[in-house]
Image 1 (cartoon, rainbow, N blue to C red):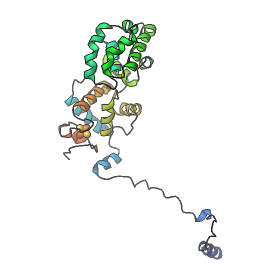
Image 2: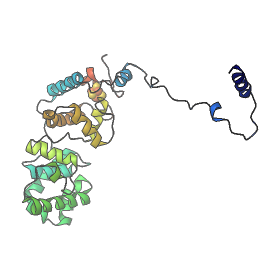
Image 3: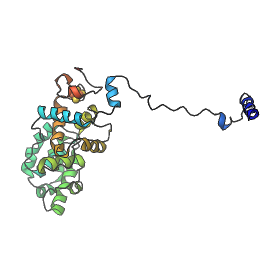
Length: 267
Ligand code: SF4
């Protein structure tokens, strides 16, 4: 045994001929990053690493803060019924609610029902909604959705996610807005640009895809809060937690927020 060991030791010291492959045993194992070596630079990141973002007590504090600041937050798009809300939400893609609210009163007057909008002249409709941007596609969506509401749903906006998703121009965000605001059905969380940004800053998600963000939020926010939560976060994004320079000194969530984007910290 001792002789074999001695042989092995002697072999290890031998020089390899040029071009010869190193024996497998002599190869160094690939360097692996130890699990403990994570990019933790300070207390904020430590909290992230500790996964405290979705801690129920923390989420409760966030909801409490939002309730205090925006107790009656609701949809800013002017509408009188589910059909008008559907039209306004389709028009709001890549457009401000203010702009949509300037366009919709005239539109609703001219086309008060899906039946009337379904037979609108496409060129005329395009001009009527032109200022909301992407008017060609939006006109197509409005016409297609209205036709289907008339032909398949008896002229009434459907009340399930599954059915709404069959309408032209309707994805989960629009369907959630219509179901939540017009029918009071908590089908999910509306993930627009504000909700997306704030959910990330508040460490409620680490995803970037809106569908995955929605799933993450649905897991941590109680279902009976989904509708109000969506509106509250959208308001918070417009007024305080803005994309470029969040007004952290005025923010009711500042004490529980450890975003790297913060512009002020009291702790
Ligand atoms: S503290 Fe700042 S970054 Fe955090 S939620 Fe409030 S405004 Fe947004």
